[in-house]
Image 1 (spheres, rainbow, N blue to C red):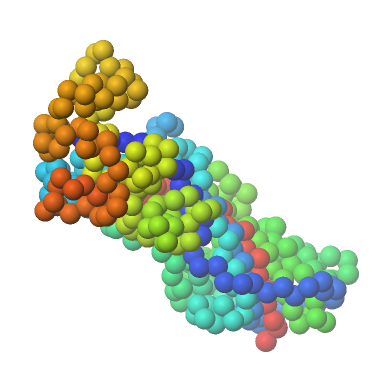
Image 2 (image 1 turned 60 degrees about the vertical axis):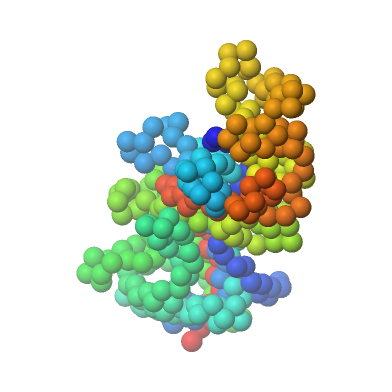
Length: 366
């Protein structure tokens, strides 16, 4: 009795990151400054974009489905996946995750982010503190925000502009100084203000993108650089307890009702027990009866069964009853005939992605 239909197109924008307010310093006049100093992070904005990738050996037409399972499916249907529904499908190039994470000074402190970077005259830098990053729990296929301790050293060069109000910064690894945490780049934009005491540093992180990594001078290594996105939740409208598109949702969650006001109009817009049985009957008819080729023809056949007073052979519930709205309450497995709304639970999925992160950061000279 497996049914499958897309209830919505899923975008996970904002689903994993809480986005606090960011600093608005207004218009500032650039002033001469020198990079060689120690700097403390005071504001950070990170724009994340993750799209479905094609790792070596993966067919170009590979797609990934985000599905949800009915919580009583195993008990009622003797199969945990018999009532699964597809909420979204992602193909190569599709956006899986797009969001903006912005932290002003107060948000940095509240989140536990604290970074210091020191640029030395010998063209080496050191980078220490706690840094926000998205990590994957591979076993659970769950991506989450973490703020781990980091320590990094490497080489840098800077080409100042004529007025020495800023310049172009390049970062590269130094094997003698250990593993590099910051991504390599040669086109970061630096700007000074506040008499050289404030630094604006903007750069694009491309070392998680199998095509764009060459822009950094690095060579792609599938094992080292590949980013995997784990999706453990989906957007939810909390007032209705339904999965929804990210632009309508106000939170995310693991479980909720499925809602489609058009396809599920008969059952109040919700996927209910009665609705599930009818959807399963429609699919079975199309699969087994050569004279029935689409949902409209299957529904006409069900209406003929209603006229004949027939009942569903599995549940013994009359088809006339199954075509009524049973969304007034939740499904209770001890009262099958009463129907009710079904609670669905997200099946976590892991998707290989290409990642680009646009960082904009402000620093005060220590």
